[in-house]
Length: 326
Ligand code: GLV
Image (cartoon, rainbow, N blue to C red; front, top):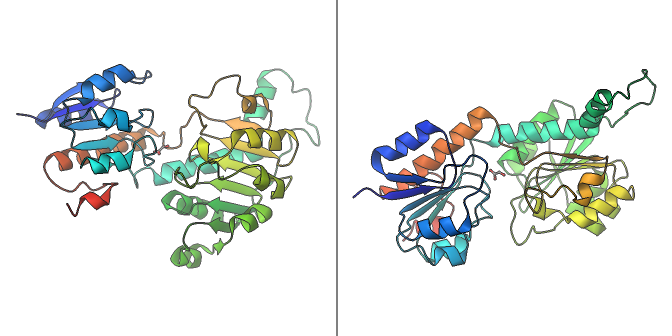
């Protein structure tokens, strides 16, 4: 009997076809509507493999219903939507998609940094709204990027790729991480700092850490107070790492200069969210890895990992490595 796989959203057809060669595949066919919880609850009961997205909460309650499930393939590098501990206890392999999205996400992070610093969305709206009456000396002036100081919080793959881009802009690069990365320090000329020191000295602060209980709301009121008044916060990791209410007040009260946000604590962010009322916030709808090439590769990687696990192999991108020993 073919193993059963459920895919929680419409994905590239060639990936579905590939999975269908060896699996019985069912799909939540929508492009833009997340799978309803009740559908997921019904499907989870007898599937062998789950292809899911970061919008799907794969929690303990759901996993308790999964009697056959062997593997969960998450189409993201982050996996905070999955209760990995509960999956591990049940012997269910969890996989993610690191590597393939590194450069694309670093590109977007740098693009957001530049768009925020130079007020690009605001300037574009200004023109389209017919407000451009003349060239003016201080009109829509922003912050310089070249020669400034960048602080990277979380020096993983994407953080390092961001540092490479920043080097091209002659930026002085600081980083804070759980552990020091001596090789990256030497190769890219990075300086390791305490979080406080980084926040005090940086012109641009990029949040690049995974979202875990330790990093939940790790950037909050007291941190904004020590940042420069001209500093810009960029978050392309997870919204929950920053206390959004404290960020709102810091931006409103001029404690920091601007923020560029690709992620929010609740997604999609509601249109009356206080942060969206501020002119010095540039927002994006969680598109860090959204290039055609990268999203296609991510879909292929999820499928490969699912097939590896269902064939009794150790998937390339297993998250809960403690299962390997078993
Ligand atoms: C996107 O946010 C991802 O984790 O891949």
